[in-house]
Image (cartoon, rainbow, N blue to C red; front, top):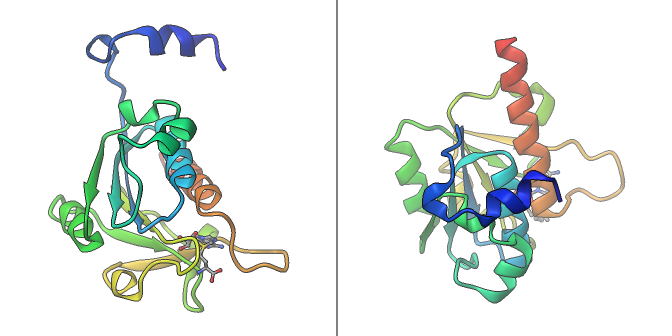
Length: 176
Ligand SMILES: C[S@@+](CC[C@H](N)C(=O)[O-])C[C@H]1O[C@@H](n2cnc3c(N)ncnc32)[C@H](O)[C@@H]1O
């Protein structure tokens, strides 16, 4: 915990200084574990993500397990629940935001090789089945995190942190 955290968290929502949000939108396609969604909320707060779209079976506040992992981060991160992932895609597209799937497929572009548009929406999938093929087809590109071990995928909340911070670093590098 940082020295700033207790002070900031103690302030009522309306008294908190608005922060400059990064033009990153995240779409979670049917993530099963409330703990993963909670962890993604915390990482989204850390990266000052513009908006989190929770779709289908994703837990959404109020939810006990989510609260345990998110530690209140859903109060700081703008979020919307959609029954259908396609509605989240439509909501970002209407703002002119391209949607990039983060998924392990044969034709996916390795993360370091992708030129990240700004703004961007990143889509993540279910822990077992990944992003549904119908939703994958709605995306403008597919990007994968290179895997150097024996397994071909990692925990979705871990994948989220890697990709989010890669994007922020990529954009920072381009403006320096
Ligand atoms: C555990 S994975 C889903 C299982 C995966 N389809 C498989 O066959 O192993 C859950 C989600 O995490 C993300 N993910 C995990 N590892 C990834 C990787 N190496 N590259 C891109 N996305 C990844 C994707 O969004 C994926 O839908």
